[in-house]
Image (cartoon, rainbow over all chains, first blue to last red; front, side):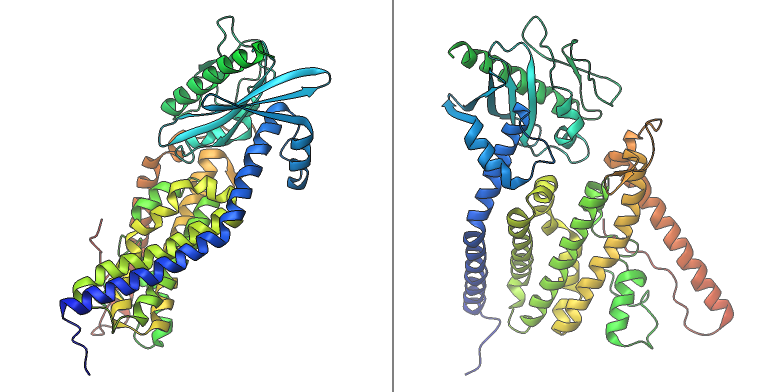
Length: 207
Length: 231
């Protein structure tokens, strides 16, 4: 029997069979790696929380993250965000993980502060889809390092400014450098930071 | 597609050698076919991302071309483009899944660009121009050669952009704090300038070589440097 390759039925059946075959392989590949991908995501989030609290840095081996996290951090779900508390040297700190809009997609970040929300303990980006090389630079270490120990302005916010592009590390001026060439991303991050600060104060007040 | 053969490698070499030479130089996807320019603009401000992109494109083009070539007798003409997109996107999604599971840091940094490999015209271009009418082994080589031909040009551009844009290569700082990064090098417009300059140099050089060959052997069929015309 010779197949008529030009018939509509052959084209339809062929396309259907090829689609099903490839999609099944993809589904299997996705299932096989699912546990790993989720573990990666959890580790990423825990690393960011620990870094924001100043309990870990980029040299901390990933094998220690989980044990440190379960030992030191308590997790609490609040409205549209996750709150964390940790006691470091007898002093309690609050952190908030919040997701807010960015330029291309949501930005998720962790901000840790004292319960009164007056001094930032640390800030870490967990996930973002900003333009690589421009807005994507919010994930670079120097950007989050600016927030370490930064005193919040009297109105309870952190200001973003066009600076030297090398970072603003003065802890007393309540101001950080925005990202050069990414004003929109900087605006989104500013909104995220200040909303997180407000949330942290709210949670800190109930402690 | 510009696979007319007028800019191909000398005919004396084996088919495999010819395919490699064509992809890497005589019919280079960037210089001659002018394909894959979108990703050239997007990822070349950083060497590491560029390298991953190049590996991804090479993998997807070579494996996709091979698969499509193996299926070429079975694919009905009417739906061949649908099948091409399906097979190519299959490999792209495989790359995405593997990166997410085993290289989460790189996957995060490349973000949407991995998925966008499917929009790279080189993939469809090679599937349509070569894989549809050649055996699987040769189609695999053609995909690989085009991926690498695209790759080396991208890496050269990325070296220039990362060095001037960040003062570093592969993320390693090479110059001191006195250096003020050229922000324009990080942004897309600089890739336009650099790609145009690279095209100009390559085609100028090709024209010179062709002219020299013509002068050396009058009457022999010279190979004028041709231009592709696909944006």
